[in-house]
Image (cartoon, rainbow, N blue to C red; front, side, top):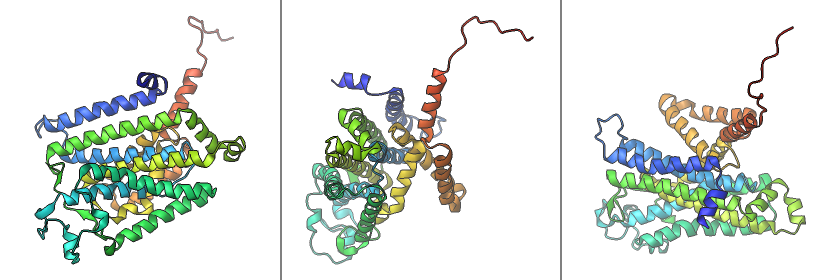
Amino acid sequence: MLTRFLFERIDRSGWVFLVLLGLAAILVPVLNLALPPDSPFHVSNTTVGLWGKYMTYALLAIAVDLVWGYCGILSLGHGAFFALGGYAMGMYLMRQIGPRGVYAHPELPDFMVFLSWKDLPLTWWGFSSFPYAMLMVCLVPGILAFVFGWFAFRSRVTGVYLSIITQALTYALMLAFFRNDMGFGGNNGLTDFKDILGFNIQSQTTRAVLFSLSVLALMTGYLVARAIVTSKAGKILVAVRDAEARTRFLGYRVENYKLFVWTVSAVMAGIAGALYVPQVGIINPSEFSPANSIETIIWVAVGGRGTLVGAALGAGIVNLAKSWFTVAFPQGWLFALGALFVLVTLFLPKGVLGTFTEWWASRRRAPKPPAGAAAQPAE
């Protein structure tokens, strides 16, 4: 069954994407760990961490493309699911610090000791266990998405109204997590991580493994999304995107399909956030910022909405440009980002991958002159 799926439902761009990711998962750690720093082929620790972060962004972009590109749900709140997954991972990492913190408390994180907390809050129970923390990485964004979607989709909230509500959701969570009495570190968030599963989180080997895990998660996320969009349910999702009223008239429970893909997308975003945190070393309420969710939409638009691979490609293109701009022209990045979005909307409405695919298909369909045909002499 798996073989049939791989050969029947993954297109050429998907195969190229998966092969390149598989090579990256193997070669980047090898070039980082096996070669000396003075080798021209050595990949530095900084580059490994940066590329690992890009992989988590690409997974988030695929999650957004799943609901926007194939179901027509323009979400301006997926940054909230990303951040919730990140906080779940951050809480586990904080519990691993133990007495090695500044205040050497065996149970409470440093910020709780500083704020004179006496006991560990109920929300932190169980996060000393890695399996429990990973369960929360999936459950917390998934349950929030399910509850939100249950009310929103059954109330038939669509279009710009739904986008505004999702943006309001992530903004409300940002304000809540800024509060010290929430027990999540307030403005400073969670940081100063030491270990993950007993391994030093700053070690070269651990960071290389985290990179490979991020790549594998991206590959798995793509396969899951591809399985959904190429199934019968995926065809209904596209019908909902293109003509929701007509699809509902045909007897389909549109809200159920929306709720399903919305929840799956939120879980994928939470997993991306969980892999992001140990590689950047911090999680704070700024990750809930609505601007982050809007930027994710730009990634998908640049790469190509409704392509999955293009969404991941867009995340890489925009973030590579961001890394360069913020060093060369720190004040000009937001202007460049806005200009990029406008240019793509006007001249590349199908994104980079969508435009290239369309050009390549038209090139292959173009009639070729018969072989050996002689040129007509000019009169």
